[in-house]
Amino acid sequence: MKLYLDSTDNTQVLIRLGDKEFVNKVDSPRNQDVFGFFLSCLEKENLKQEDITEVEVNPGPGSFTGTRIGVTIANALGFALGIKVNGQKNPIEPIYSSAPSITPSKQTKVSI
Image (cartoon, rainbow, N blue to C red; front, top):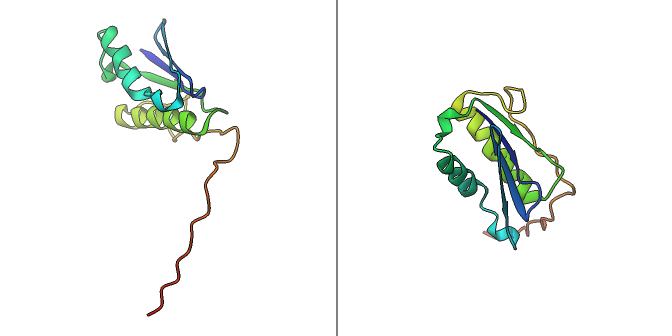
């Protein structure tokens, strides 16, 4: 069975299992539980992760966290199940809509 996963929009998750589509809309990006939603979709369809034979993920662009999590889940499933992700054996890299907003680390000088 083919799994399609799209979590690039941080207010919803789209999952397709074969011909069935599931959408989980959330009011806050903090509530976007991609893996939990994926597991609940499998349970609704009486499927196991081992039933997945192909994975396709939207690598972006999209929100930093949503895109990163979706691609990570797809790559982890591909590795664990020994199947290709987006038709390739190598891990898929996320495409972000902008650079992450990470502050530079503060270097502390220690005198000895």
